[in-house]
Amino acid sequence: MNGAVLPEPDPTLCRLLADDLRAAGYDSLALRGAWGARADDAVARGLLEPAMRALGDRRDPLAVLGRLWGLGRAVPRDDLADALPTTGVTGAVSLGLAIEDDDLVRPAVLVRPQAIADPDGDEEWWIASDLDEAALGGPLPEDHVLGVGGASQTLARLQLTWRARTALDIGTGCGIQALRLRRLVSRVIATDISERALRFTRLNALLNGVEGIETRLGSLFEPVAGETFDRVASNPPFVITPRVAGVPAYEYRDGGLEGDALVAAVIGGVGDHLAPGGVAQSLGNWEYRADEGGLDRVKAWVDPALDAWVIEREVLDPLAYAELWVRDGGTLPGTPAYARLIDAWLDDFDRRGVSAIGFGYVLLRRPLAGAPTLARYERVAGGGEEAFGPHLAACLEEHDRAALLDDEGLAAATLRVAPDITEARHHRPGEESPSVIELRQGGGFGRTIEVDPALAALVGACDGDLSVGPLIGAIAELLDVDADALRADLLPRVRELIVTGFLFFVDG
Image (cartoon, rainbow, N blue to C red):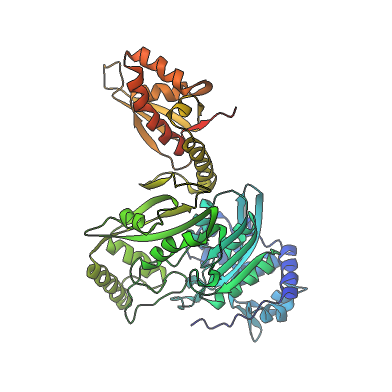
């Protein structure tokens, strides 16, 4: 268990602390400047010494706070008193953020600045969380509350940019998703099985002056029985962990169920809590078994009344998966404990016939009316995550518009090729006609698709001037093929290009 008790955060002390942090210039850009870009990157990998060396014997508030709450190192009491003139050392201790030790003050938690950017602009938050393994110098306690890690950043970047009234954050942890959602919705309910995590969420909301976030204790959907929401986000404890003695079960990553059952429960249960038009987005792991593929398993969990877009980004074999998560808990390779844990993972996978484990993104939506129109289960390895949220939002909007049109309506629509699309043609030496034509997406998921000359010509002609039907007719005449047959061939592929962001409708 975690050694430091985290008390209920005091609003007045949180305001005072925020004032002190702001006055010290304690933000991500300033810290990166203080210890340098290379040391900053090393801190992200759990290597603290380069940053400590760069700070040297500096005693200014930024350096003191960077050592204490950025790196998790003790600082002289007098230096911290100077860095926190309104909160004081006593205030920091009362908030449960620091521990006095004679003339030194040790960190009880980390409080790291976190820069974010979304359509509303740039923002800087201070996010408190438990000391990580670099600060602890060893494995994490099982009730560890994680800070802003890679998975939470991924989910935040995936979030649609649509505004709404209400949102639910399942398994909130330190509260980063709740804070992000609050920028888009009026009211957020954040749930977790850990009261410690909920206290961190309340602390972080107070520290950053964010209202409208309510916390509730409980597992999955139990705290919101009978309620529906416009938005749901969940970075659930999706890690598949052996349920045997001697294997640590970290609350922040292990859901306490066998295999991928926790992810199945999130995906299968969220439909009951989506208002009409409501969207749920989550991360997850799913197993590949001898008789069933991973995406097939996910499809079986999804409520058939929902729109679904599931994107698998990565597949690991059981050994690589075990090594990833044993190291994540702070157990070092080459130790007896490491070998024992790897064996436990492999035995667990063997027992269920697991051949691989997939990781990916799940987007579910309750249609405003009628039956669902979207069911995509795909593997996509490319693209940069920075723009996934706006890209998904734009693709869904274009899909919804296309779904209202029959083939006649689509043929009458005017389209334009997206500005990030390029074309590549590959020729064999000496041949005039290309053997391969590719359309490449510069943004979004960075898709590359092979097309035939007819579809390439149609995409190239989509400049917002003529509608799709006349363009197909002209291409049929140019290629000397039957226009009706070409139209029947191209229109379904045009719909695919719309939903994947290659083509978009021209208004009016």
